[in-house]
Length: 223
Image 1: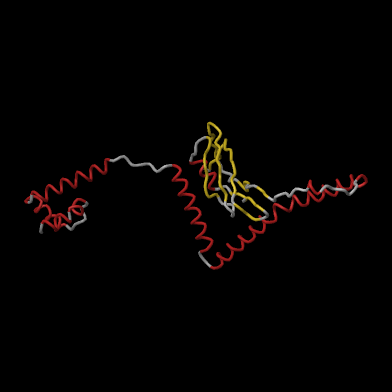
Image 2: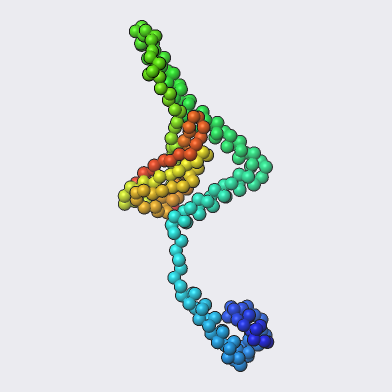
């Protein structure tokens, strides 16, 4: 075997990936060739130094972000993997859109109409049906984002202090980013955010992005 072939096969030799015949030929060559023997020793030293390095721990926020991305991708593949699942996915999206469009108006309109009729019935004898146009002011139709449901887990783990989390919600009610202005982010809080669903904010009856402040003082974890 030539020195070039020996030097190209050093890593395979150290990993014991060669055949028995090739291993013996390598050993004979290394015993006779000082240059190749020195290369083997340097390669072994580099491998030992690499194994001695302290493993780098993944940042906790990166770990949580990757889990959220993986969960979204897994859900997307399950929902769009086949034609029936794809149709069911878009059917659910349309129902959610219509529900988000009508929900902010349903209860306020009913309650507002009932209140207006009641007050009008009380004040109609004293009304002069006069108004000042200068006092008319438009009222914007806006609702903020809100928590739809929080996962209910089994065992309990308490934090030492309250944690404030500012969550950014997109038009579909999904969490796209978060910030921790007070307290510390933990894996338990990450799990809580991962399984919490939100209702998006609306502006002029259309879903829009919004921000929501959550206060977490007690984390309930699934065992």
